[in-house]
Each structure stands twice: as structure tokens, then as C-alpha cells.
Amino acid sequence: MGTVTIAAIVSGCGSEPAPQAKPPAKADAAAAKKSKAEKAAAAAKVKANELGQVPVLMYHRIIPNPATTDDRTPAQFRADLDRLARDGYVPVTAAEFVTGRMDIPAGRHPVVITFDDSSPSQLTLDETGQPKPDTAVAILREAAARHPGFRPVATFYVTRDMFGKSVKEEQAQVLLWLKDNGFDVGNHTRDHLNLRGMAKAGVQEQIGSIAKEVGTLAGIKPVTIALPYGNQPSTKEWAARGRLGDASYHHKGVFLAGYTPSASPFSRSFDPLGIPRIKAMDKKGDCAQFCSTAWLDWLKSNPDMRYTSDGDVATVAYPKFKNPFLSTTYKTYALPY
Ligand SMILES: [Zn+2]
Image: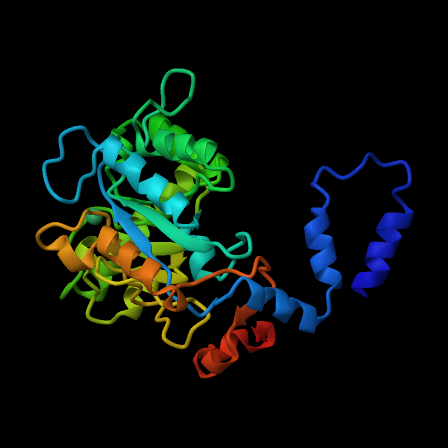
């Protein structure tokens, strides 16, 4: 049926202009033709391990004078991104991560960069609609320009603070800018209250109302949520699915606040209702072991534990002996070697 339809469209379109979509790169077309054995050999060559761990980094404000250890300066954020690029990481969004659509080159490692609380230091637009210098988005785009292949993408977890904008039209401008430029918008609840111990109706009100807001303002339906303070409601599922009036929310991933890299979404160890994140911070004090610098050092010195891509989104490649860890959901995509 599908083939017939396509044939009919193709034969009826002789005079149509060429499709707008880019033709697949030569490498992609060649990869499609390769036999499974050749694909496995190629995966082995780059030591692909798509059951390995992925760092999900948690940022808050990017400001010149940090008030707490949650904040980073523009210079620190720049250095963080340069380090990620040097270590072979390529950013993917939280939505791409939880749905297993991490389209990065062979031999590279995914990193998820997340920002909580929708502060103006993350994105403020000037009068021409460009991100202001030293905002997180501007710094991320500069890093992508410096490091070829480094994708300027991140996930922004929004509350009613809406990047410091109180006028609806201005809130819409910022959200639409993110959406139009390949950034991902997630739910961080309306009022940033602690959901632990809250009744179901309250949880649904907190999550559902901000979901409705970003939907109305920019047509965005968040794929993931980050919980305020990393605290889960008494029934974990309430954060993932719920209703508010005639609207509903359905998240494919629920992110927490600490303190380890995440399991691969293809691994049996992956729990979509409680995905750990790592605070972005140097190896100091409380962060000597469990923040980003420490974990990136650890992943670098334990490369067999880290997620390494085979460059093909249609397969899940990994060393054969890790087979028991493959999630049953992804069995048909398995490429053990
Ligand atoms: Zn927060």
C-alpha cells in the first residue's frame, strides 16, 4: 500500500520542483546499503556502546556574579562547552534523548544540556530578535561555531517566570524563538513548588497549567519535565501523565536533580520516571565527586561505561556481552558486535 502510494506520487510529479528536503548525505546512503555484518564491524571500529551512560547537565542562571553554586558565569559556561567539545560530546535535547533519537556522528558521545527556571540570563532577545551577548543561548551558538559538529541545542525547563517576561506577547516571542531555532522546551511546573506530599489535584494543576500556557503561547507540547528540587510526587506517574480540565499532559521523561550520569534510554536500567541529572560545577566542596567536572573526568577515564554512538540512529550498537542490558523495547534495533 505504502509503495503504491509513493509510486503514484512520484509518477505524477514529473513537473514538480525538486523537494525542499536535503538529499541524504553520501555516507548515509552508503550506510543503508551495508549488510548487518558490515555495520557491526563499523560499530566495533569506533567502539560504539549505545547502552552506555549519558551525562545530563543541569544549569540554572548564567550570570557574571554567581549568588549560589547553582549559577555559572559566562566564562565558566564557555569553558564547560569547550571541554565537552574537546571530549567528543555532541549536545542532544532531552526530548531526543528520552525518545532514543540521538543523531550524532560515529564515535561521538551525547550530552544533554538543560536549563531550569526560565531566567532571562538564559535567553533575552534584542530589538532585532537576536539573543543578547553572554546569554546561555548566545554562548552555546558561539561554541557551535567554534567547534564544527557541536550542535547548538539545549532544553529549557520553564516556569511562570518565562525568561523574565510578564507581557504575553513577549513571552510568546521568546518561546517561539526557541522553538524556531531547534531548542527544546520542557515543563518545570507553574509555581516551582515542592511536589513531594502534594495531593494529586495540586500536582496536576501545577504541571497542567504551565503546559497549557506554553501550548497557547507557542504551540509547544513539552516532551519532558524537570521536577522542582528534583522531588517526585507521592505517586511518580502523576508527573508523567495527567489532566487539567479538557487539557492533558504526557511526558516521555521525568528528570530529577542529582547526582549521577543517566543510563542509556536503550538500557534496562533506564527509568523514564526518574532520570538523574548532574549539576554543572567544578570539583569543589560538595561537588568534589558528584558534579559535572568530576563526572566528566570519570567518564573520560572509564570510556567503556560511556555512551558512544555508531552514527546510525536506526540501530542500537553495543559489545555483545552487554546484551542482557538491552531494553526489550529496542530489541528489533539491536546491533551487537
Ligand atoms: Zn528549578
